[in-house]
Length: 204
Ligand code: GLN
Image (cartoon, rainbow, N blue to C red; front, top):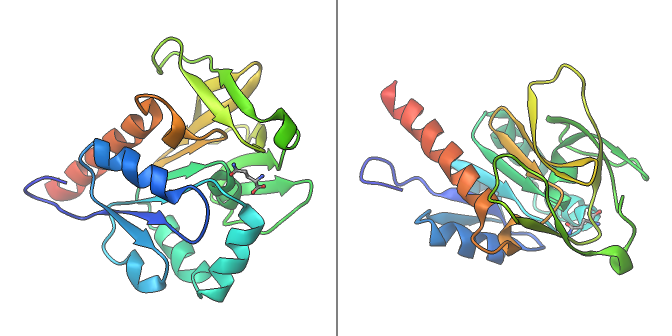
């Protein structure tokens, strides 16, 4: 990513919208590596869990033997960008239906919480940190029903009264699709987190 540290960020590439994340990251000069098998997790500067279909991703994680090694990487504290299905995989609690997750992000999500395909679309976001007029595209999106009280989390954007972008430590999670946003402001925010974490690592 610069002369001192060329570690790429990994983009989970089993299924879903990984290619658009790679394009968005490339636009910020960030090298990416598709993560499909455990060896791909070695030496990453960050990890992206894209949108797609979380049940399918869970199956493929098992098929590829990735559940444990990916969980280890996520728990290592590197910056993580989790979007839509990726946010479901990372959440502490998943409702309707309940399903397995890595349980690292202190939020509860309701799958398809805005209705199914018919209710998908692009909606205005309310935020103090994103550019005025920023919208988010929600596709069979999970709804964040709770951010665990007392957790070290900041809500960075809302859709109506619902939190839709949260930052908890090194994890940034969105219920919408940042890779589809014009100008990619959320991707930019995460790239800054990766560069800050990398700078801190180099200082040690
Ligand atoms: N509805 C999907 C799921 O439950 C998520 C949709 C998305 O990632 N756009 O996994």
